[in-house]
Amino acid sequence: MSKDFKLILPTPEKLTPIQALILVQLLENPKYGYEILRNLRDAFHGSWEPKTGTIYPSLQALEKKGYVSKRVKDETTHYSLSEEGKEKLREMSDYMAFYFLFNSRFIESTVANMPPSFIQEVFMKIHLAGIDEMIPEAPILKAVRELSDKDLKRVFLERRKKILERKIKLVKKELKDLDG
Image (cartoon, rainbow, N blue to C red; front, side, top):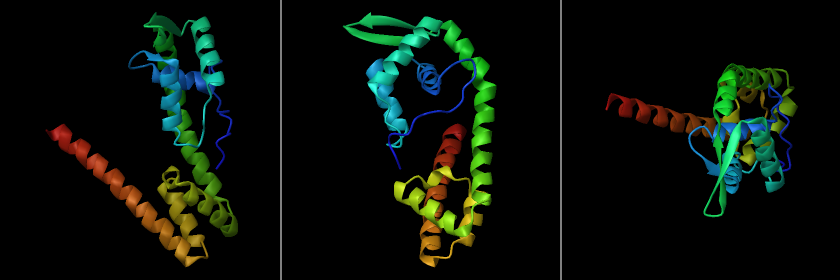
């Protein structure tokens, strides 16, 4: 999978996808530019490598729009979400919920309409890239049934089982913490 992937996701309100990601990062507390860059790189697990030449112009544009403010402390510029920026994110919450749903349905529809030979090719690339978690359960199980390579089927199903067991473990921990 390419690390040179351009982030071209649509966003409302004349925000670039990178600007939206930056606003979300600033929800909890101020951050300096390199910290935002590092967090984005970590979050994308190597599938996208944002550059400083993308982050800093985006921060400047957000500041110009009034969505972020900056403060220099110990020669480091920290960026904070302004009240206008918080309001913009509140306005975008419906869009974000719809976007998550759309992406899930897009993946399901795409997988459902792939011929078995192409599914095998795509799934092998997904597996080799270590991004098995991105595919919703129903389409992955349907697609796995159609794979001709039984060893590959087993690999995908075992990997899926581990992913789901890890997710269940996280949910159980949260429930236990909730019950105190």
